[in-house]
Amino acid sequence: MDKSYRIKTNIGAGVEKMINVNLKQDVDLYEILSLKLSQEKLYEAHSANYGVIVGRVLANDAFGVPNARVSVFIPLSDDDAERTGISSIYPFNAVTDYDSNNIRYNLLSSKKEFPCHANVGTFPSKRLVLDDDTMLEIYDKYYRYTTVTNKAGDYMIFGVPVGQQVLHVDVDLSDIGLLSQTPRDMVYKGYPIDMFESPVKFKKTLFRYIVRTWL
Image (cartoon, rainbow, N blue to C red):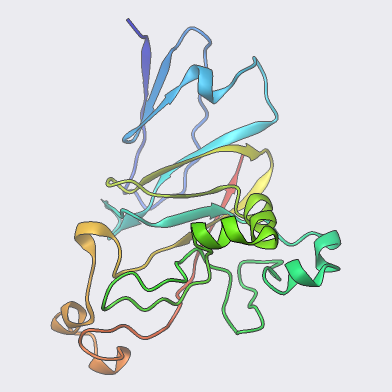
């Protein structure tokens, strides 16, 4: 029978927290939040120069947000800054930077997913990545540490280099599972109608949420 170890967390306290865990070799499975990490997939050797980020995206200080996009931000390298093909698509040296179309760094879909959805993002679709060699190179290099939260709002990113990192989160209120909102829902809650394109369509606006983390 597998030997498992439950890592205790204190979510909803409103305090950023880094948990130090002694990863013993005789433990087969680590459980944290709603996630499970197997020892053999976590670290293949006794020591490693990378880490694992595990967390939960919260709403109202306690409720996990599903389908939130999370990434470890990677700034544009000096070499790629000299390559027009790459720098014109990914010009970002910080998550607060904007591209030539005045759209900031984001992880939101560039495709319209459903009627009230406002496709404000520039994150490439799978088809675009597969069909465009430049986009594939950008995806492999700059979006390599990107994931989405599960139904509990939890996420896990493997292989992150040690040191200070910037963890970026994007949430589309119209595309978060059972918590998804329409403009009409938000008007009922007291938001002014002029915040939206119409009662059934959001405006094309990006909001920013940035988290810094250390490994």
